[in-house]
Image (cartoon, rainbow over the protein chains, first blue to last red):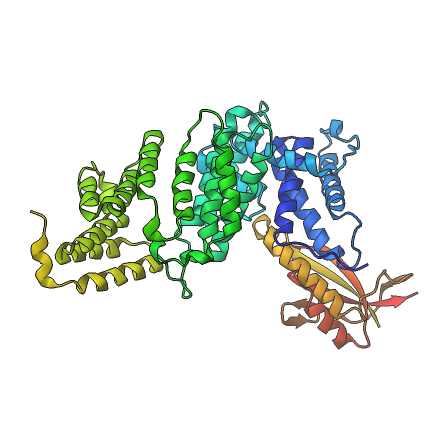
Length: 410
Length: 111
C-alpha cells in the first residue's frame, strides 16, 4: 500500500480536530497537554505513514494522541480517574461539534477579543506562535504572552460551557477579525493572507451548519466573507500592485463564490435582526452584482452605509458613504458630505481621508487641492502597493490644466 | 552493511514544527523513502546490535562528524534501519533525512 495523498492544510485541520476532541475528553484546563499530544501524533505520522500507511488516518492519529495524553497523566499519577481507557469513535459529526465547541471556549468573555483570536489560531488552526506573530504583525513574544494569559484563564475557570448561544456574537466577531486580518492587513505576502481568509471561511461555514451557531448573522457574515474572497485575486495586477474597484477585471471575480454568497445573504434575511454583517454584506453584494463599475447601484449603497452607521457607528463608514455619494451625485455632493463629518484627528491623519479628498478635488478639476491632499495621503500610506496607487493619482492630477484652478468652489 | 539511523531533534517547545511544516515534512519523508527504497529496511534486523569498533558518524545538515556528538538539548525522535553497500553510501542516505536536526549513523553487526 502506498502512503496516502493528503489534501492541502490537512495537518492544520487535523491538529484543530485533535485538540478539540482531546480537550473535551480531558478538560479545557489541559489544553496545553492536548496540543502537545496533537503535535506528537502528527509528527509521528509524517515519519511512519510513508512506509506504513494506516487504514484510517484520522483514527490512527486520535489513538496516538490519546495514548500520549494517558501516558502523561499516568506520569502525573494524581489523575488516576482518567486512566480508564476511553473508547471513542472518531466520527466526523462529533469531531466537527468538538471543533466548534472549542471555538466557543476561546470566545470566553473574560479574554480580550484579540487574545481570543490568537487562541483560536493556535488551537484550531494549528499555527505556531511565530506564524501567528507574522500574521498579526506582533512580536512572537507578545503572542506568547497573550496565549499564556488566555490559557491560564481557561485553566482556572472550571465553569466553561461549550456551544452556548450567549457567545455566538463573540465567535462571529472573532471570525470577522480573522477574516479582516487576511483581507485588509498590510501584510504583503498574499499566500499568508489567503490562508487567514480561508480559515475564517471554513470555521464560519461550520458555524452555519450548527444548530446553536446558525443565526441570521452567521449567514450574513459568511456571505460577506464569500463576497470579499470572490474578489481577492482581482484586487492586484500582475505585478502585485493594488487595483481600484473600477479598474478590476470583473471577469476574474469568482462567480461560484458570489452565487453561494447571495444564497447565504438571502438566508440571512430571516427574522428581525439586521447586524453590521448584514449591512456590510449588502454593500459588497451591490458591488458584486453590478455588471460594470458605472452601473453600480450607488443609491442603494449609500442607504446601506446609513444602516451600517446606525448599527456600528464609525467615522470611517461616513467617509465611505461620502465616496458612494460622490459616485451617485457627483464630486460636489461627496465633498459636502465629507465636510459635514465631525472627523476625529485619527481619521484626518488616516491616509484614506486625504486620498479621498484628493480624488474628489481632482474630479472637480481643482489641481492644487487634489495634489496637496494626495501628497499627504502618499506620505501616510502604509504599504508599497498603496503608495504606487497614490503616485499614479498624483500623475493624473498633475495633468489637470493649471488654469482650471478657477473652477474652485465659490 | 547494515546501519541504524537515530534521528534527533530539539526539545525547545518554541522550536517545534508547525502544522504547515509537518505537512511539508510528510511530503519530504515520502520523497526520502521513495528515493532510498532500496536501502531502507522494513524491519529492524534480527539479533543485531552496534558493531564493536564499527563505523559511527553524526550528520548535522551538510556537516558530518565522526563521533556521536550530540547537542545537550536534543532528544531521539525516531529511527530507521538501512542496508547500504558502503559507509559513505549510508552517510548519503542519512544526510537527506528531513525534519530532524541531526542523524546518528551506527554500523550494526548480526550475532
